[in-house]
Image 1 (cartoon, one colour):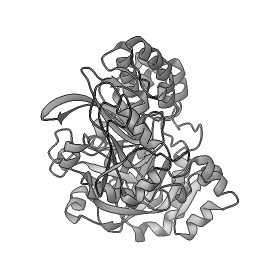
Image 2 (image 1 turned 180 degrees about the vertical axis):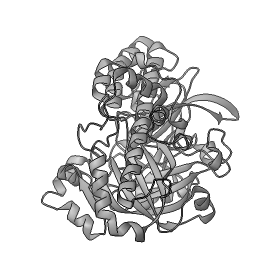
Image 3 (image 1 turned 180 degrees about the horizontal axis):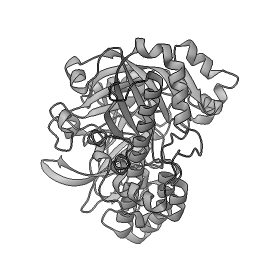
Length: 485
């Protein structure tokens, strides 16, 4: 995946590696990568650490330029990158959010056990596949008018629930309650609206999926009980984002940001880090349109949740309430958030860029749902379709060290084209079935691009953030059935 990075990395401890700020001209702070000794060798295989150093050059950056153990090469920021800039005199960068704005994960719990689901798994998967559109360019089952889409941009998942597709408690257990404030639909282009209006309620393609899983290992029984998780329990994970809508919003912003760099005299080592002062006209316009895309993504996952409930009801002949289907939590992976954090002893308003990173707020934070406030935020970490997923819990240490952030998944080790090349001629669905995992996909090409070996070992990634104290392992769930776009 490119040329090996030769820059300096100073080992701080078993799980932290420092790129000193004197490594290159323009760095305003140090870079810090979370990884084990074993993982750091792979991380050096591409230029992602150089991107960590480049991010350290952003005007107004506070703390360190951070990278999680699932770090790999991305647009501008590395995927797995976290950086906070002061609201007062710092910048906002679309490269610190990414093209799939609020690509994120929602987990639904059920009261079902594996022994109840295994006999009907094939039928359940087919009903879900029929009810939830997936694949490249897939369209949702409901068409929204432009005026309705404006409400989605402003009210997110809450608007979907108001329309009857969900329960009020769904949004209580969603980051930002599924409706981030600050949206301005007037800042969204007609092209983005055209791309998005028929895609609500669809999975899309690439690494997006819907997965039926079973809780196999419980690491922290007390926290698991508070989350409503138990061994042998069947859960559902939904991984998708803002589809073409968010992609177009990011694309639209990049040219504007290039001009803004010249206008405000900002010089950076990588043009992909194009940015504008947060309080500038260009910075505010990007943020307001990004919030529209984030709310679109929460609405998207809410609609899919409704169809998951309907699918389970059809197969089991019971109501979703009888089946105990509720939202455990819903987290964003690609987003910029206005937050207040302690930096060098003082409270500072910052824009936290999380790109391929998960918010992981610790116990007592007022934005957390009442049911989780005393224990910390649920953190959802999907692996690849062959290895399952983890639920973790946020910590006070993350609040002090990473602006309340942790990893977001396994992280790619192989490009999509390389994975496709290496898996030619293989029947990936058959290979997965031999491992006890049923897979349905719109395209065989998607399965080849998403082979398990294209990803890092998610258990190693999670081990690092657990041992570094950024989030603590609660349960591991292995896959039973997967739908891919």
